[in-house]
Image (tube, rainbow, N blue to C red; front, side, top):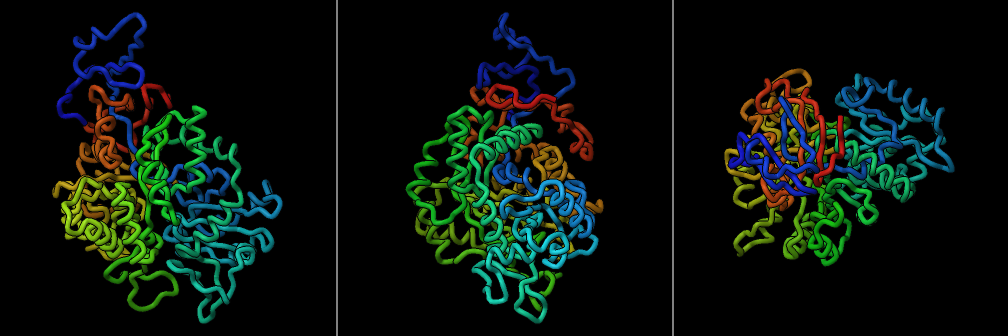
Length: 528
């Protein structure tokens, strides 16, 4: 990823710094009797891979949840198979003292019934133990009657701002399916009641090691709670973090001065606050992404033209975004639909109105239903789209139904962005999908859906550009291009040894390349 070092055959590192990149003859002067010499042979050395958007703390906590995902992430093919998993967990490890039974990953687009499980389905597992299942998108959920009762949700409960309690047809009675703010209320109620500091630290160590198996040397917590920021900083002080974690607290009445100071503090023992996050809409796989043109196929129970909705108070959001930008705090803007992307761009443009746009690098997280004019505007506004490229495989066939081919073909328009000179990244959004970076690269290069359909061949990246997006692109997004993203002298010794060269194998084989070793700060964090 450093044009000046193409064709290099040797790298020397001392502690956490790259000292030399060049040929075998030139590296000899760095070799002493104490030097550890690694011969790669036909293996390939690349820079450490950068997680440009994901949720490591959520990934950590999911060890307590039932995996209700569909293949290739989990076993569920229909609603009954999910109920069987829940019954088995309830029998083997029932929640204690009023605890909840939790699950994650169910996907109505892949279940045989092509619908969400309802409270009626989940009540077949238990009517006394609260049950909540997080949709694969993280933006919706399903609850049984007990969970709704404990949460005081009934026929008289209004929809919260930016959310929906779905109802039985013709009534006001909630059917157990929840969207956006309604789903978040139940989920965070559970998480808040189950905070155990030492258990969380152990879960985090497991999650960090899991990310390392995929070659990741910088991990993101992309909707951090302030209590998690404090917990991760404590882990850092105790020397329990062996990689870098960039935390992006979610905007819930955060203090601008406090976050500004945290971002200025930078890394401490591998942990830093990288900015602040706003969530402007929902998800396309959940059909809650806010669009300017109606969906081709609506969610269950919705008739007439449907474009979903924003999840923020728009005037308040713009005011808050400006206050963080004025304080030089990077802002991360979750925006899937093009209406949400318009809002993200409007907020940045209005914040800098009458001024020359500085190097702010505001990130548009996901940037999925991004129009061609918005790609142009991203360049003008110096914004960084972080494309959810993994969607092309996981939900590409679903997007064709939701949006029609014209829009679906331009989901995550990474190649258009590259041609316009837009800095961009690509991501998995773990735990929505696993942090498999070779599979992510394969998806960005091939854009094959589950059915094998090529979803917009014009938006396919070259292998080099896909790898660049996961290395130098990620470093740029984080304002860390001076110390990460390439094998260059003086940079941090974050490196990955691959089984084969991803730029030279057949494009369809990229996903099969094994990660053999991950090195962060000059130390091995994973060895196959």
